[in-house]
Length: 128
Image 1 (cartoon, rainbow, N blue to C red):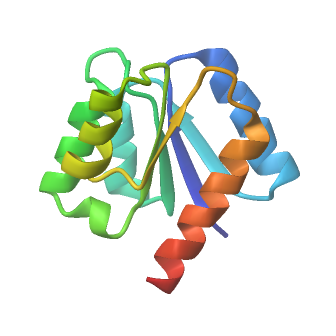
Image 2 (cartoon, rainbow, N blue to C red):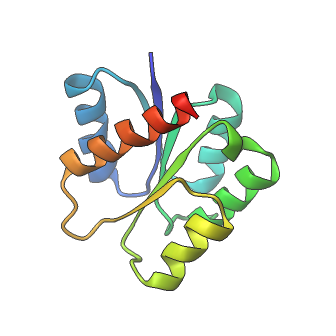
Image 3 (cartoon, rainbow, N blue to C red):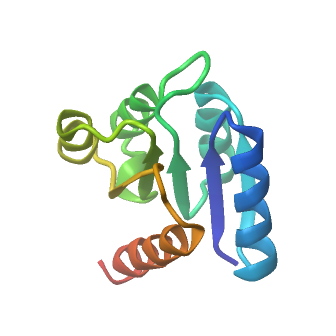
């Protein structure tokens, strides 16, 4: 079963995606609140994909990406950034320098689009 990890400090977002990914899509799903918890969970459970917010308590999402990259985890675990930050510099930095697989701006983002992108990234990683 495909395992998704969401690293997101907004409790309503965590609950919404928990319901969508488990009940509607049948994925195994976990969610944590901080970047530190996320890195710990990634190392222990090796999810198939990580959904990552950038503005997190204790450790920002960019640092999570950097730590994953330094540990060669991004080669086997794709990361989709979900953030309110949508400026070109941040997007480019996350995708091209830090190794994120995809980037979605939260503003007006519908869960269906997130599901579609998750499935697309997973399919790309499986075949690549």
